Amino acid sequence: MNDYLERLERGAQIVIQDWMKIKRGDRLLIVTSDKYILESSALKKYALKRKASVDMMIMEKTGIQVGVFFDENELIFDNYTAIIGATDYSLVTTRATKRAIESGNMFLSLPLSVNNQKSMLSYDFIAMDTKKSKMMAKVIMKYIHNSSMLQITTKAGTNLKVYKRDRTPGFFNGVVKDGNGYSSASFEVYVPIEETKTEGIMVVDGSLGYIGRPKEPIKISFSQGKIQKIQQNKSGILLSKYIKKYNDPQMYVASEFGIGLNSYSKCEGNCYIEDESAYGTFHIGFGRNIALGGVHEASGHFDLVSLEPDIYADNRKIMQQGRIIIPEPEVY
View (tube, rainbow, N blue to C red):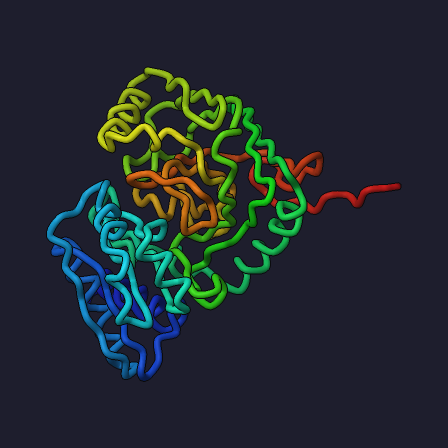
């Protein structure tokens, strides 16, 4: 077996053994497509080694609106105790996933979309220490939980305010137990932000999610929670065309705020899950956020990533140029 296949197999083993903790008696469903048969077969092999039963669901139709199918077929996961969404696009915000989680079953979002020829399961970030990421998340979440507003600035020009009153932060690090039954391959703290209140400017200089790395920074203006204007340079035009493909005005709504936790990740535009996981970045998610704890319905979900933020939870600075800092205690 060559080095590449060994790394892919290692990734599959980490997912089944360390993230999902599949055991004897589990009924696992792997949702995938013909494009990812190699990865799905590796996942199945390690699940079978742990004495689970495994089914594979091969999606004939894939694309940015694949989640619509799982909204329209809400009961589709009912016969399984564990589900892995191993397609191009995330299924974590769909109705079927929400039902599975609420029923006490495990769900892992494992979007395998990449912009190079390497399988995501072969990437180094898969091997990040999940205990370390959990500790990092708890530090950040402590301050976010008690705040009502987050302000984000960057040297590139971002000056953005997002609001989260009565919204609860969470985190992903692959491990479904840490996520109370569900998780994502994206290592991040997330908040399903108030959908009508985001205001200001975001300069996207890290990643355009599924599209890859922007060739130049893009200035995006927000008002009342929605994108109002996208700078029409080459990358901005590409982003505008991408959003229009959803044919859904709800995809312009900022619905999630996230902070990357994975120090093994690189934000290079090769893999959007790696990009938004990268320590030293923040991202804004757009579209559906139901499974994250929000109330916004849309036909999909995508993220835009920016580098080296200063982040304030209310008036407390919790990150400086992308690095976690511990705020000074308040003096009364």
